[in-house]
Image (cartoon, rainbow, N blue to C red; front, side, top):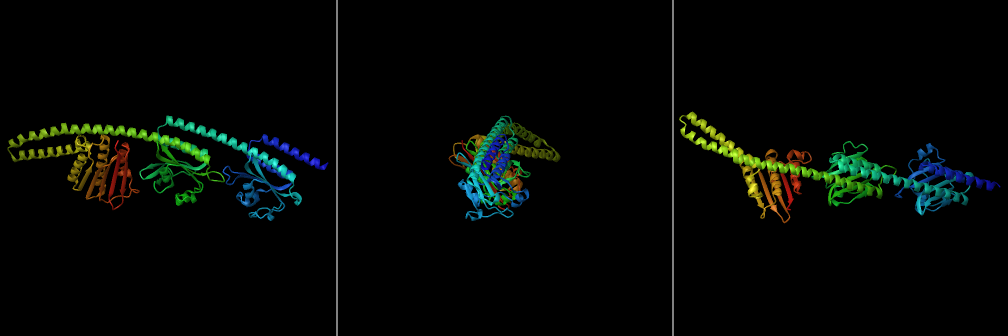
Amino acid sequence: MHQSTVQRDRLRVLVDTGIALSSELSLDAVLQRLTETAASLTGARYAALGVIDPLAQGLERFVTTGVDAATYAAIGDLPRGRGLLGVLIRDAETLRLHDIADDPRSVGFPPHHPPMRTFLGVPILLRGVAYGNLYLTEKHGGDDFTEEDEELTQLLAAQAAVAIENARLYESSTRSLRQLESLNEIGTALASEIELEPLLGLVARRLRELVRARLVLIALPQGDAMIVAAAEGEETHGYAGARLELEGSKAGRVLQRGRSERVDSVIDDPEVDQQAARRFGVQSALFVPLIARGRGIGVLIAHDRTGPNPAFGDDDLRLAESLADRAAVAVDLSERVGRDALARVVAAQELERRRLARELHDETGQALTSILLGLKPLEQTASTDADRAAVASLRELVVSTLRDVRRLAVELRPSALDDFGLSTAVERLADTFRDSTGIRVDVEAYLGDPRLPTAVETALYRIVQEALANVVKHAGATHVSILLTRRQASVTAVVEDDGKGFDADEVGGDALGIVGMRERVGLVAGRLVVESAEGSGTTIVAEVPIP
């Protein structure tokens, strides 16, 4: 009679627990209730329930009963899945022991852990998928756990599996909804916002929320480096505008390879700058290139998933790639809008330069020439030395002004560029530069026929012109060489001087007009390389494809 009463009581507890669990929304509360019920039904002094993380790399939750808060805190970190707990995680089979210490797979207990002898471990399974384990120890009276205890614990483990799966399904559906909302928000922003900075900030912010990252960065290439254009996360002060080496950084290599990479441990990746990783305290990372029309235009970087395991999962990587596609659209659109606007400005400038140059040459120049011709009768009729000196002085002033007008007309838009092409225009530019500065200039041109497109000729002429202006202002050079070469599909201009050079890290590129050169060459889909070092001169190489 007593046995049947105990069974009825146990059954009532199971039914009450099932009813309570069906009405409980908090997974932590459900697992705590199951753990306490398992201890109560089996007479265990201690019980624990461990939930394996979705990546099966460790425990994401570990719920206990019977261990007071002080002891729990003294024990420290969660179990790492070694010893008997590791056996249960790997094999997902029930384990019942008379004494834990007798099993050769046991690795003992950490400091401050209460002594435990009898043991019952049951896997939490649903449709063949292991979600965790339910552990019971120290049955009252020192008895071993029974088969009936095992069956009851398996029933509770089944309920735990359903609760965990439902919680993950709910979390997955909620996450999918947040993803959809974020994608819609970013899509709306792309349609209405043309400023790049707020768009990239929105992408970084939404990715950080969705993958629960500690830090998200978006870096864009600029010359031979990558500049952080957006930063979201904890303590991001100083990240925006930070410089990453294009050749020597993980982000730069990902951009060059054009494929995403997930780094579970940055300390084990030889491509990661370990000094920077330690300085910023990062442990894991996602690197996703921004690809637009087959071209790498940036890298999205996420660091350290919040929680006990900082590593990101495959779902996180796929989500980052989805948002990276949106960010790439924003960057590409911004670049195209910027290029189109710059192209219109440059075209208008060149048109105005051409008009002013022709006016100076045809009107102002001719007017000054007429004045010179008009001065000849005055020179012949001057009767005194003072009159002759005044006319001579006026003549010198007119000649000097005419010379300046012609020089200014050439600087604005040399007629040789329009009439004869790039080679002749650069040779005349070099002659003028040599005469005005005394610096020796050698020009070698191998362009051949047919003539280059007007846009290409103009861009390369302006780059050579700006490079020569830099030589006068900054280089202190005695010799400059200019080389123009043409290949089957491209043309290259090289300007090299023997001046004092500069340190690119210390001297802002914009101060030397390099940003303007890059913009010029970018308008014709070319590239600019600047090589310089203190005391070693400077070499500027502009390569432009021939349409």
